[in-house]
Amino acid sequence: VNRRIFGLETEYGVVVVPQKGHDAGEQVPTVEQAVKLMFEATPNAFRTTNHFLPNGGRLYVDIGSHPEYASAECDHLGDLVANDRAGDHMVQNLANIANTRLTERGVGAGIHIMRNNADSFGNTFGCHENYSAARDIDFEKYLRTLTALLVTRPILTGCGDVVTEPDGTARFVVSSRSEHIATTASADPTKNRPLVNTKDEPHADRSRWRRLHVISGDSSMIETTTALKVGWTALVLDLIENGGSIDDLVPQDPIAAMRIVNRDIRGRATFFTEGGRAMGAVDVQREILERVLNRVEPGDTRSTWVLDLVTRSLDAIAAEDLGPVSTELDWVLVWHLLQRHRERTGADWSDPRLARLILSFHDLSARTGLRDRLHAAGAASTFCTSEELEAARTTAPATTRARVRGEFLGWAAQHRFRATADWGHVRLDKPTRSQIDLPDPFVNHSDEVQALFEELS
Amino acid sequence: MPAPAVATQGLDSILDDISDILETDALTFVQSYSQTGGQ
Image: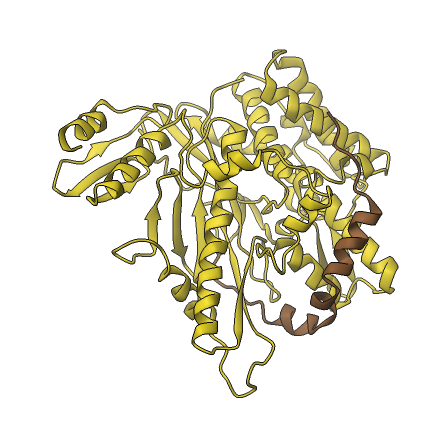
């Protein structure tokens, strides 16, 4: 297993709706106003909308008034899941404070935060994955090969959704995001949305590293799906970087294949690969799994967990018995929720209550969302302990550069120093000191930062 | 270690718990969701 930095960037959707007792003539705040109110609640004297945090992550407002959280650089799946969940906690906490302020001001409206991939009007946003890669790889070949994984991966890592076909028929799909992917690689992701955004921003020494920026994945709600998405992709990257090949499994028409994969929960619907074979999503994933298994070294716990879940998931999907993985995969749990609701109510797939149920699955609120309820009922698996989740809200991962940045920002706040940070550097602005560059994301200490601590503590 | 399958009973309990949310103005809520600007 190659040591690798990975991280997640989650764009959150915001819904503002009238509450009970809302005056019909009263204006409901816009999304822009709601997000502004949320970020007024951030504990930062300068009231900016861009915060690097002591837990190593970054909380900010992106184009279109998206609250966005970028996790710290991680090299362990447990750290990643916990740090990612910390972002959910922070954003929902801001919404809770903003909602209290709305109530205090007598505004009959509520703000809901959605960790999902599409609004009700066809706009899409994402949960972007970042993986470090060596600068000297053949990046074009790397991307082409990776297409085999990314086109078929949603059968494992999709979040489940209901879409309306051009003929007006509503149907279940395994991935929300897959519907919006238009090309395999692009540096212009808002106009021509790709599997991989090819912008070259390594946030590290560019002579040594690239950053693989996968933007085709769904926003995962269940911790095990998040861990599977990143852990499985990292293992396949290891395979490719270590000389393995899955070129023959690349679909001849990747985008058409992605739509085919998305519409078949059995994972059997076929498309033609570059190797000339008619294969379904489960076939392709199984072949990738076999090639990874042939190369992975025994005893690596991260690999063992990931490979076990991939194996069990493919077995369950192929057997059309989803029960064994129903608490671990987002789309399978959503499928069960929707089917159960349909059985109880007779609702058809176009019923708005199903769309509302899906939004509840993605709603981060403890009051109106499902995550806490699913955990309490044992219907959603966890990957981290509650102690790990709580610690990740304030403490950066210990084994990467994030630790240096997190400790620096925590120290500066404690001493009421004015400080700034970015992925690749930290700087003390008041009192003024020179910028300290942190070009290596794998290094978890800095002599220069330690010297600063000793000088000013 | 495989995780246990989701229990229908557990889902029923959750669906009961949020029935007000699903039955009250579901369409209004869904149609209120407009979020532009993402990647």
